[in-house]
Length: 125
Image (cartoon, rainbow, N blue to C red):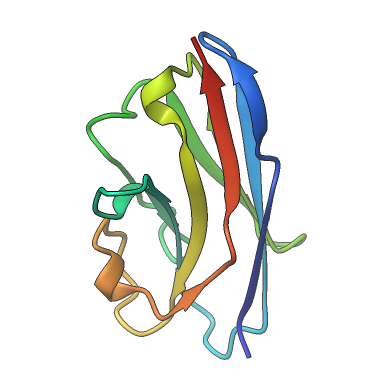
């Protein structure tokens, strides 16, 4: 069974940085996609970024382009989300998700079959 565990969230001042990690295990397919999403109460789930381990293609949501960077260490089973120049609008619960059915990078949450429990990121102004 695919298991995803997020870590690295916390409280940071505006302009600061955080690095989130997603420990991913249990895949039954060689190729899969790991995505990061965020949820703010009262708003729809937003696709932040994703990475494909087949061709290393990536996706970034418009609101994070140029500030966030996704990377992976397949040997360690980890996917990282480096978040720079954070602002209060980045405050959210961040979720790691995995797709091993469609296997192309997308910010659409309906294409992901597995989800972690999330990690809170709070940016103070």
